[in-house]
Length: 303
Image (cartoon, rainbow, N blue to C red; front, side, top):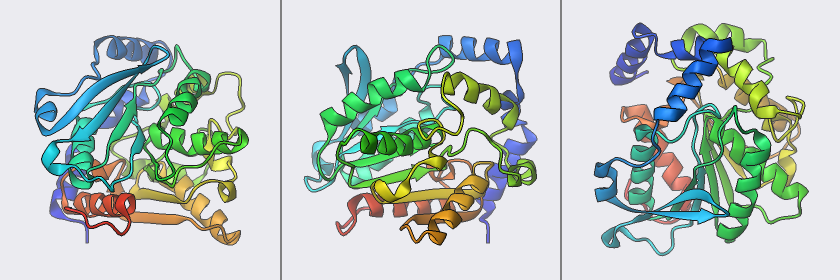
């Protein structure tokens, strides 16, 4: 049964027309993206800096943050994490991301690296992976966990495909949270899902997909990891909620991989919205606990 808190969040988002900015196209979308990118700041809130250690690093002039636990919460056995944030390929880190990542660091004791990757429409998949691959090689250890949410979840899965193509080692595990899987948005079940999703909407996303894919077909695995060969990548755990327009593609991927008997850890939460695991209601806390368990596997956690 869906918790009361979750229902209230859903109703509030719906009543406030939260996803109206994803309805924009044309000049209105371009103007909003331009203004928001100009005004948004990826830096953490002061409250977050009191909870964990945060340092800024550069690789070929590209910024990434390194998040680590305070001395009392260090877990030397915790694996490092490379995390790609969501934002529809056009928006940077938000306070919600920072709160989630701070909890992840404090709970697992892991060191988390978060790239501030280039955003569309000025940039495409090419610039994103021109940063992602060298950063991955820099941070790689055999126990590295590759993670991402929404657009960042799609980037993480696509990166794993690219690593395989380039003969590079895979991470120990991939954890994709409400990932963007197929930017063609051609799954007919998405249409019925739209009325239940209070967060996302297709009009803007289809335009952004063209910005991001640039010279590649929308079905190329670097753009839409739904079409990647999951038999050749690290073990994947995918979290998805059924009140999310990305859910039909996640479900379809799970069905296809099951038919091919390819291992795939699929975790579907009924009536949960996009990136629900970043919130604090009961279903979010449960998903967060499972995420930490996956990161640490048999290591005792403080979730």
